[in-house]
Image 1: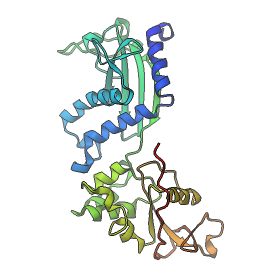
Image 2: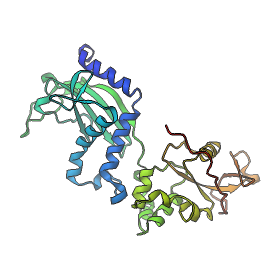
Image 3: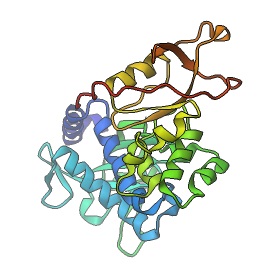
Image 4: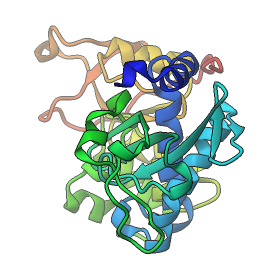
Length: 308
């Protein structure tokens, strides 16, 4: 039984101490997907767009990124030494279908699964003992977990939310509009025009812009903020007053590095009861469908967000 495996429980306790609620491990997985897709240089945002060799490399990159994130020592035989125990790191696109090599038999395996499409990830520990493994049938004698082995997984984090790749959730006709132009600035304008009220990550901006100076395409002075202002659209960014305004309008929370666009309208009698903010000396609300477009107020850039 897992609870009688003192080494497994020691490794579990150590990982829990390092990452009590899972954000660091989940961030490492997110970072790996973004590195593989390399959207800034390729415009790719779906797993299916990767080459076979890139998909194969995903497990190695996750292993590397976890080691960078947590500073795990190298193992003598396996990937890591955690709490004084050898641990092999494995990743699979299908839950718990980790390929376990001969050198890991008898040792602990830190197994991960993630789906960008589902926006979820899981991580668990299991002892790669003979009773937990199926017989090896492939040429390199790698083995998979048996039914008993799957039942023996000690889940550290299960079906946790993976930071959203928002492009995956958009209707096809919207992504077609966003990506149809050869101009990076035009693509960014379309992104913030069609994706409103949702946090948009820096990586998404980089993927759509496909340029080195991608965040410049969001800002004023010719960027999306300038272009979309005449349509009533403002783009909240990395300033405390932007965050405060978004909170006051009861918009979804957005994090460091994120941006969010929304169309505003001057508050009129039919907006009674809607949350509002004061900008340029007038009250503004999130525009309703039938509100005509009007020039948006300027968002002062006050108080950059503190570094976390």
